[in-house]
Amino acid sequence: MSKHALITGITGQDGAYLARLLVDKGYEVWGLFPRRSTDTLWRLRDLGVAGDVRVASGDVTDVSSIVRAIEASHADEVYNLAAQSYVAASWEQPLLTGQVTGMAVGCVLEAIRVTGLHARFYQASTSELFGLSQEPMQSETTPFYPRSPYGVAKLYGHWLTVNYRESYHMHASCGILFNHESPERGIEFVTRKVTDAACRIKLGRQQELRLGNIDAQRDWGFAGDYVQAMWLMLQQDEPDDYVIATGRTTSVREMCRMAFAYVGLDYSDHVVVDPSLFRPAEVSVLRGNPAKARTKLGWEATTSLDQLIQMMVDADMVRVQRE
Image (cartoon, rainbow, N blue to C red; front, side, top):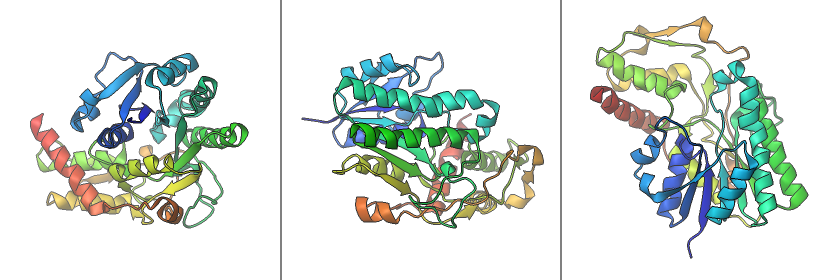
């Protein structure tokens, strides 16, 4: 018999890629879907699985609807990917971010506990937990020092997952994922902002791209690779927490150079540093150590940053030309 999975945040980048992975593995996939007036299924359509996902109406901030979704789906695995995940917006909406990104993790964990179905649980943690990093390369034992309301909210969700694992012997694991991108990334995120702008400038649709701190360095990978790590965590005999990363860093400046060069442009002719776009508290460098995931899960990133940027530029070029 096929396994059943419930995904919160299924309409986001990671949710869509994870849904496709699980459908391909023969799962019956359910998505917790807050009813909205706008079209939020486009990523599932892009990846060809919109018709393969069953919908459970509910919200991560509402325990009763999560309980109903778990019972309706007979979930063997629950993946909590729902969040207010845009770091910059978390300063503008700190309380909303705390509720949706942090407190809601407790709603999902408690719903799993009270149903008694013993579903395995995955919590989407983040490299933003490390923030003002205490080590040059961050691993599962690196101290946390979040530098945004988003990071603080994720820290609550992370430690609550650990607490439920230890208190109730739940199979609950956290994936501390470093930056992961794809053609399905939201336009507000810097990678899509850059690839979209490169295409628009190449086609004469705009003249410049305004960015904040382009010397910030991040460990970027492909979301399609990273959702495989999520699945692998819930297949282990024992729950645990894992850093998922490439182990390599690249600056925003270099990422701009790569994207613009791919369409035959020099980024320095078009990228403008705008001080108003700097964050109140900057995170200069994040670089993950994926050794534990490689050893215990047999996972490693397979898509290079060059391949990722080219994939994103190609997709954005099609989108912009279609407008």
